[in-house]
Length: 146
Image 1 (cartoon, helix red, strand yellow):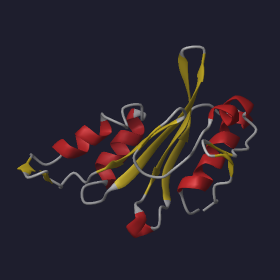
Image 2: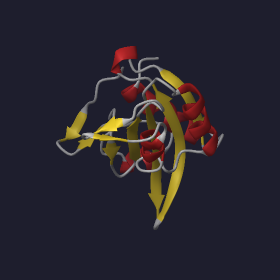
Image 3: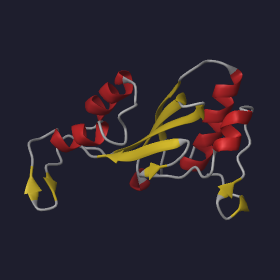
Image 4: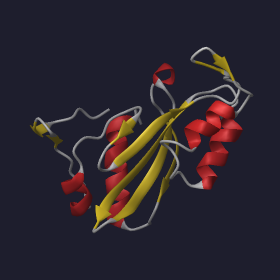
């Protein structure tokens, strides 16, 4: 995994072929994150039913996770999680930048958790141009062991 280098206390160095994304990145990090260029969160297994002393039906907590921090994941990746996440927890990442008031998506990544060394399990580029590919591939270096 790539170590962060800080330009100043509120911004890490991020270098890809996508200049606009590079300028807007403040920090790329693992786990539950809400930032200018990243939304990510842990997704509980389908069979996990207990939370904060309450018991829920199977799948309820997983669906909650898929539609809160991970609401922008494409349906294909949500289905992948539902199929493979019966007893496994994942971390899902959405990367984007802003143009005017619009959110422009770069891509999406699903990794395993710390117990399985943050391996990339699935990824999807929003666009197939070299700038987008470069930006998402650089993000992955900060969140996963490849």
